[in-house]
Image 1: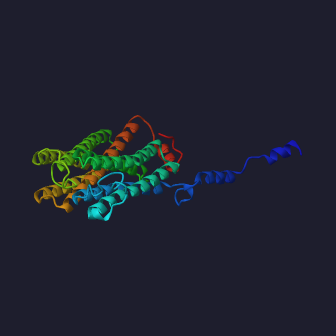
Image 2 (image 1 turned 135 degrees about the horizontal axis):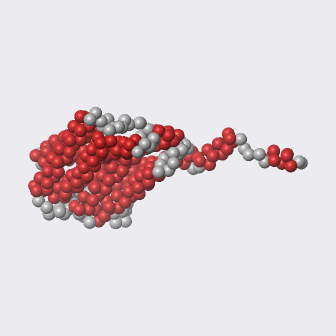
Image 3 (image 1 turned 180 degrees about the vertical axis):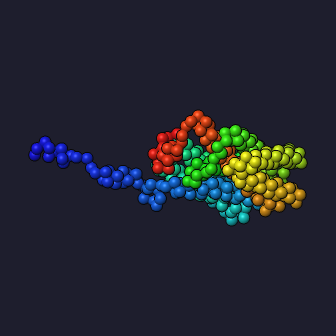
Length: 353
């Protein structure tokens, strides 16, 4: 055999063969699951939406546990009772409700794993996307541990408050992931002054939304619906805490109106989003006022908790959208062109951020 023949036999594989080999290696175990072999932008976006929905859902079901007095339906953790992970008949309906809510945590775990895999297997995912998916996935078991501590401390109101705040943090992070993975191109403001003003106001709204929600948890800790008839209260005056909560809401309404008017006058693309936030805030205020005047009926309290999650989504979305405007305006001002970068991200070969 001649040297030339040897070279011919050892010639590299065709591009098609190399591509098939890469695809085979990429599939692996989870690659055999439909959609995960080579996730599209829309596939990842769907998982991000699911992540957000289940994290909002657990806020509502957790509220139902507290409002039905089932917070200690399973009196210990991680087991339901000493020696058993499932409730027995003597625990009655309260045990079934609390156990059911604990089982819903596994739904969050499954969705978090699916989202994490979709993001990591997506060729166009950035380092920020991967960090977000990882942080949310780790946050869910951490949140479950805080929930367990609340049970072990007989529903200490400050621990219960932390439990709700962490839920809001996961909702906010999930919203960021939805925003980042959305395949839809959003319009941007070309006026750099308007972009900076909108960004500053949206950050104020975001921070004040957090403050308002936290004070709301303090109000809850001072009033009824402790989650169990014998659960301790934080000892603060419910009337004074409710007034403080209302004061935060009034300031938040003023800021939200300022953002909406600014966006409208300057013809910013965020006008509709700002108006939706104002509408959510108004509805939340009406629900809060009625529930206070009618001695906190269960349905209205649950609606108020859902409203808190929706407000967190709205505030996070405003910060992200106005913030992307400011970055875009700064890049235009400095002469940077991101057309190629956007195209690279859509094709999946963008540099890692």
